[in-house]
Image 1 (cartoon, rainbow, N blue to C red):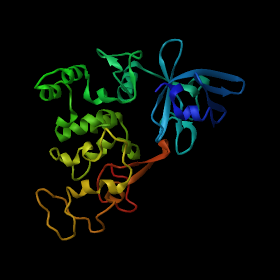
Image 2: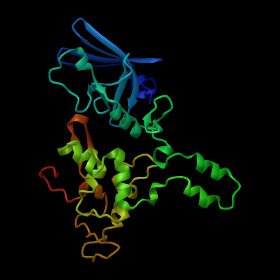
Image 3: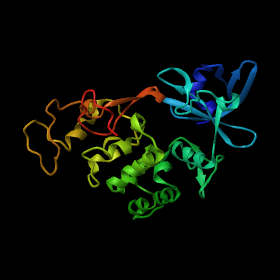
Image 4: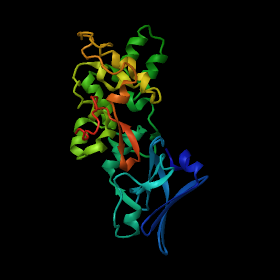
Length: 308
């Protein structure tokens, strides 16, 4: 969203953060969110252009300079802290000066990837187009261009339901492995995570990557695809009990009960409710100041090392 539309900034018009000799602040008024970094008598300020993230966990910011390039603010807002801290993985122990302490230049390829996941229709003909993008993830972000679909639905055509479905992409038609990669395009596929060099607890942020490392992962069972548990058209469900029917669709429901083709998973000897509390552990990621659900489904053993 535009930074001036970010409720986090509007509701907290003066956010501050200090690191060593550097003082960071974001001052928000009706028509501007001004990002400032100071050290002693030095001051450098730029108006923020874009805010990334709803703030359920955090929110980060971009601004532009006279050269037209994008720059990432080295501070982000974290909901658990209710204030600013270093943007994840952007902290510098000893910046060379106020500019390095303040921002990181973001190249065009990276900008295109950022907006592709956080906005809709941000690229036209393979080129990033800031002037025409739609803020946020709307229908066409997953379903593709919808003009032909709308036209078909509006036409007085007896074959309308059939033809209209052919004129819009439906991710539900994907095979399970492809469906997980489809979601992973923004949430982190296996190879995206591996090739990025991300390791340890930080990989928990990439739910599709962690899911396919589960012992029970297979390439053909839709009960382990992302949308088996998450409805992309609804807000994230955070009640563990809401996921129990999905777990029981794979696992037999009582100890001693024999597995079947339809229910190949053994029964849990401990409980038949709140399955995810035990088998999808919450993992704290220090850089995010928050815990994330680990989608590597497993029997979590007390004191075990984080499984890569």
